[in-house]
Image (cartoon, rainbow, N blue to C red; front, side):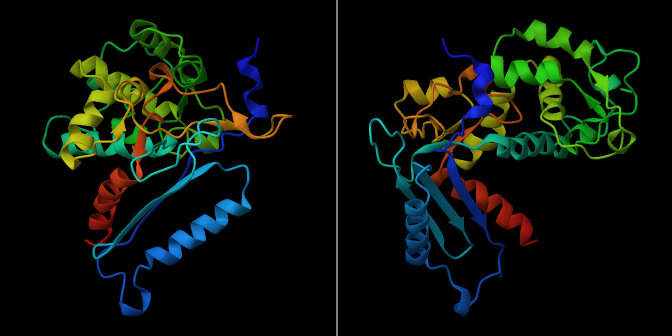
Amino acid sequence: MRNSSKLSRFAVSVCAFLMVAAPAGAEDESHSLDCDALESLAAAGLDQLPSIQGVSLAVYTPDETCVAGFGVTDIETQEAVSADTAFYIASSTKSMLALSLAAMDARGELDLDQPVAEFAPTAPFSRKIPIDRITLRHLFAMSSGIKNPAYVYRVAFSGEYTDDQLWDLIGATERNRSSSIQFGKFRYSNWNYNLASRLFEAQYSLRWQDMLAREVFDKLGMSRTTAFMSRAAEEGWSLARPHATLDPDGTVRSYLEKTDATMQSAGGVIMSGNDALKWLEIFASYLGN
């Protein structure tokens, strides 16, 4: 029987997704978007990287867009990657969660600068955790100075939990020991976003997945983007599959695949190239202001 502890021996190869956004005024006649050239480069690059089975490319500018798929979604079925193929976008999920709560903050529906102690007064934190100072903004800026590896492991890897168990597990939160990553200092981690989403769910009785759909996916018309792997399966979406590149027999389909239980708020969305253009337009608009 295969053991998940062997995860470090495998490289997931299919999920190659390139997204680029350019702000208004960034292009001129001498630097116009050449989709044919970009697609040729992507195809040539794929030929040079036998471990990569498929690639999706999405480039947005206010005047032109380019979206294309290359290779296959699955080495076994040989299904071709298309602009509608959904790829796991991993930590890019964080930007969607942050935007969703920022939108609610802008509408006055929550306050990103409210201390966690006030936002979620019943959360079972240890007295050693300074929740009277830590705010939602600190969580999104990854400067909370706290950690909880057990929580992160359950939601991202084992998938063995209930909502009540995760709530109780908040009690295992610890302070970062190093002075360089304590409160107010940046330390990249999934935990900050996992905690923010769980606190949000408890206060608003709304799953973070449904919040993303309400605040981002539905409003932008992203029809091939979801935080539920089950939806992609039920609706028969084209989906890029994970592959192991260090198998003795060469590249093979990996048995390690995301499920609804391991699609967590710091890395739990699949998105197509066509939908990526809609997402990139948001960034281009912001950069152009």
